[in-house]
Image (cartoon, rainbow, N blue to C red):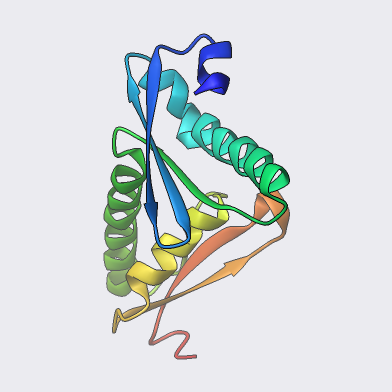
Length: 142
């Protein structure tokens, strides 16, 4: 809450424990700013908060930060993209390389398509240029 207040955000934080994980949910008027472009501010808030808590307690703290259900909306959006691209790859047989994305976003698509009988996925590239590739199983049965 202090970080949001000092950042000038009009928001409140609710928290809940789920096993060993602490879930923070941010609510308020500045959700667009709290989330940031493609969730970048939300991710940074989570990293900063987890680091502070981990140092304070002397052990790693598992933390999840969300705002207005952004994370679920993001996953649903990625799943729609994955389905559209997978259908196109299955139809044309041509692999598709998606734009660079965060590891969590690539993982969401890998998991969504892992049991698809028509396509398979893999990642290529390094660092910020790492991309997800969707390939027809007929072309790449591995």
